[in-house]
Image 1 (cartoon, helix red, strand yellow):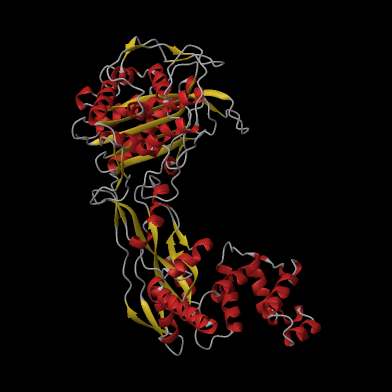
Image 2 (spheres, helix red, strand yellow):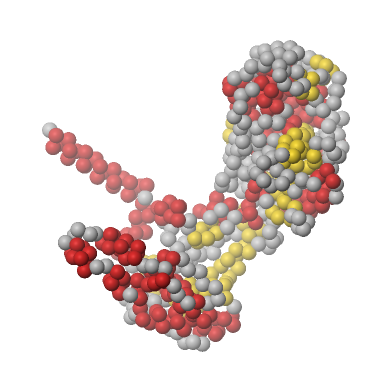
Length: 628
């Protein structure tokens, strides 16, 4: 019975292996089979697809480059390879060699390190008491630094020799890449039969550095991802997208390689032509992007003239389509000491800040869902005083406010009372306000439903979600409600305002132009409550804190924000100087929204001085530029 059970288990295991080979890794094993039985090989990486803006303007393109390649002939010896490397070594300018390269060269030149193993150890190897791997490791460990100390000229030979010995014998090995016509002529005049010219492509950027960090880079397969790519049918020497959109859409952008049969003399016969990769079309409008760059640079330079902005070195801005999640433009800039600019757009997905009162649309949602707000009830704006804590107030006395006018005038007091009542408690002067992690979760779960503190689903690798505060305390819950506790990424603010524009329906942000929205979740809130949130945020731009931010005829809906935080002024790793972050988020027009916009100005001012109206000026200039 046990034997039958064992046989049955072995048979099931065998079926499992067959299933894995035929279904999960079919492409990988098919390629291996062809290589072993048909002696068919693939050419070098084919040109990648272009990256285009929403109007078809080319943002990333290919340009052909000349390479000099080595192809080993069937009768080429090691000595011949060394001869070729020596002849060409004088044309190598800056060889890059690793310790591994030098040790491999030493072994190749010294009978594979035979003398590094003692007679006794060879006997143990013959007696199978030392394995082949152990012998190899002994050789490797016994190669000293003195043994691989080579002159500059020798290192050039080693560099070329290493390239010639890499990969399979039938493959072309690139020795010199992106070379000039004159250089090609010089080398070909040496009449080395094994050396020929090939043409490959490299990425070029017609608009310079703008968005280059978002496009990403291409290169060799990272070591830690090699198994993943091999199982997808890639070869070890393939060029792939290693970051940004190049990585996100590598399957789309990569082309198909030409295929060849390896002949008996190691020459190649073409079977199928290579195919260029497919183009990637983005939602980005490069004209809007360029105008956004111009405006941000202009306003950052203007702010730099103000003493209060001495810690203001970076800013972010982005424009989207609130109905689809499409991103029309996004930009992050850092101003350097020489007043030049560095593109930091990629950090709009990874850096996070306390964003201030822009989050109050989400905070009001928490109040409506948890009984913290009585619709239309007016309360006198004041200060909240908790036990053993200083008073917390609005930025000025705002008189009587209700749930709509509290958004319009950005009443902190109203949100403080809402937060207390959402925990089931009532405010009393100098009260002990005890809260639990569940009270924070009430807020965080709603905020995440808006995209704040949650991944936006954007088609871009390595997005971060900001930082959640870990301390549970009543005064910190009040800070949370006005955007001064947890931190959020600039890109998440775009999804937040889009979700408000869609009455609680959250859609993934998208760089790639798509045919349909990618739905993520819906915030279950009565329509009448959303109407009041929208009305309050509409009044922000029509008599409220952002009255001069956007032409009133555009009927914008949104919120401004300021957050007190701290800055590491002497770069010693300690945040020691109080500063203010300034933000604004909005969409327009109110009916049938066309655009959403976010502007973030971290550390725009210290807490005692005049604040340069950076977010207002950027909003005004960009809304005047955009068609409607």
